[in-house]
Length: 581
Image 1 (cartoon, rainbow, N blue to C red):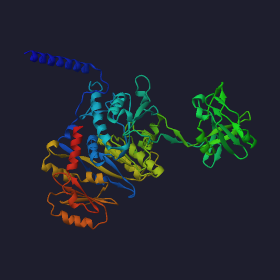
Image 2 (cartoon, rainbow, N blue to C red; image 1 turned 135 degrees about the vertical axis):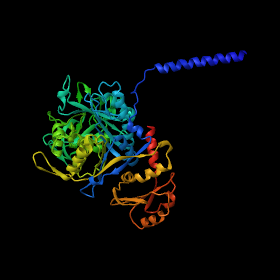
Image 3 (tube, rainbow, N blue to C red; image 1 turned 60 degrees about the vertical axis):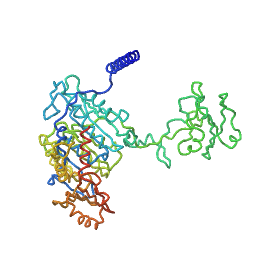
Image 4 (spheres, rainbow, N blue to C red; image 1 turned 180 degrees about the horizontal axis):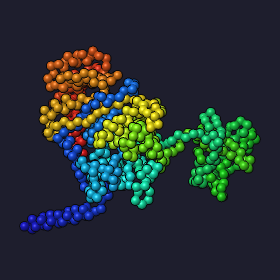
């Protein structure tokens, strides 16, 4: 009995200690963003339906087949991002978004209704809304991908913490203050607010960002020139701030011969005593002039470089020149790079290059508060790749697409954009698409002046939903449905956007370099003949074959020019993964 009693006491003591620890954990202050989660109808829809794409072929624009094709997707952006998680996972170089700011002006729609400013859950609803989309967007960025998010004071603080949680605090780059030339400032209740913010994150933090801006060369400042370009004489070679006693390896003497323009060094500094030794008289007799680092306020300073680097680099990066006392001294060649560091305070003319420009393009006002074209060009230019893919899934008036086309025209790049927007108040058809079409083809502005088109290609898609009953228990009939309706989505994944054939058995797309073929049937009776025909072509071909599982036909049908992929299982896996987010 005694042993049992002791065991019970020990157990009760452990339980008591555990309860105390649980209480401590519960009472401990937590750091981070906590909100009441809300599920949207469009998110819940994806538990019983899978999004696909349908091309609107009448809206296709082609000006130059040698250029990339840009994409405009009409539909809820949650559905669009779901599709892109299959077609473009890890393929996007830069994302810019201008989400609803959740202001007092009822600018934010959630579950098909405007969220009232007095709604006690308005912040939670907004965070739930943006959180789901940012999680999907993160999957799309490649390893060097960049994210820009515009926002104002209403949600800026919450957004920053949310982005830190999703992308990692270590991947935060900068918070830019955007002066939008007082657009909407008169609506401010107290002070006139003429700025907003733009947060910048990297998928993985690195220095592969355009931090610099080009500037015109100042010939008055950079008045000297050598075979490496123009330079100014500014900093002395002993301008380092710490004294020689802390940099004892930099106390050498430089001997300079003005006629020969030659220099050499001698280590004449006694490190233990902290004094210079006598000059080398032999070198002085040969015409060399000794130069030592300066003394300022009774402090002996060192040279900026080690002795080894001096002897290697002095001819290209240093210059010998007499100072005002007619004494020889050494100076750095401050070279012009033609660049200046960009700043986090930016000014963009939102009226002229936002409102007025859009009215000029469309011929009338159809959209409130479009972004400045220059702002979007600036953001896109932070990515160094001139063949990058840019995504905007709150596309609005289409400024991002316009900026991509204009940058390509300016620097000969081949960037391409993907714009996603719903069609509320016909915005996709009458604003976004119409703007891009006119910018590509050309238009007449409000002064009846002809503005030349920038050129480019565009494919227009609408999101569609395939009813599959339950995503976690998907039936054979549902798998067949997905296969028959996934053609345009697969074509986008393979960048073969031109449909050349479709029948009950297969669908074929191509571009100028390759083909994509989708075989719909469980019945493989016509597959062998199709593959024989495809093998006769020299074109690389990706063949998607219907199957009930994974990797059923890859080894059986792959050949030197045919790569076999499964359908629809990989699509279903993507949507199951999204559903778990």
